[in-house]
Image (cartoon, rainbow, N blue to C red; front, side):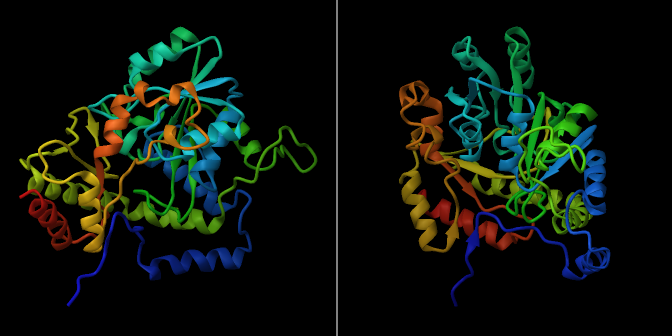
Length: 371
């Protein structure tokens, strides 16, 4: 009997019967979007859960990134990472901004502040780092540079839902932090995104920009976009919040099992655990390097043939894609750590409903290929 496929992630969904009363309430109210009651309730609930002061919901994380740059009136050059999902740098192109790629730190896979400082020019106006795999950037080092050079900082925090750094929400760092609430994320609203901002004035501006620029029925203040979250999505988010702590606990349990089973395999390394961080186990990357009998891509293909759908997050590098590779900063020689990481990384399946038997099936294959 063949075994069922194991995917890198699957959406965490609450029981359907719990969602039906929310749908009935939306149906009765006839309010489907435009800052409805579920939308307002979810914004308030997320502020409380995430320990942030202000949060604006969006239709998805990419529109939220595009809007965050507009809200801060960013121009010219923005320093960012080549090691991310393409939405990070695509949001810059959508705003007619020039991405400037710099290399990452080997131990965090996040932007290296030393490389950031080397790349700052008179045209630099902002830094867009990514908390890769939910691992906190050197937020103190980045803030120091931003303060010295007068730069804005927009964190792509797509992986960082509920991450605590030194006992406080990681989302409070930077001028803005942008969340993805996509179906594959730790916390999802089917599709969705959010921007964490420091004050009500910025939240008001974000509200204008995500609703075509409307300040009232007859006043348009900016060339905004349609970035509003629907009531259906917001209702799912409210229901998800009831289960999020249990889902995070299951993810950490799965992560611990992977670490135990894969420890000591020659050529397989895992990211170090950090005492200053309360993780969300959003991803579980391993790195296939020297000492492992077959290369990363060969292991990847072998797993695919056995219906284990691990992913090479992030490969290829953003900087190698056609719309970016002509930039001077995209030269692979300038990005040796990012290049190596992209050639070695393999993100293993991790989601709350993943069984211990399936985790063991993944580990058994990695161990078998190591001999």
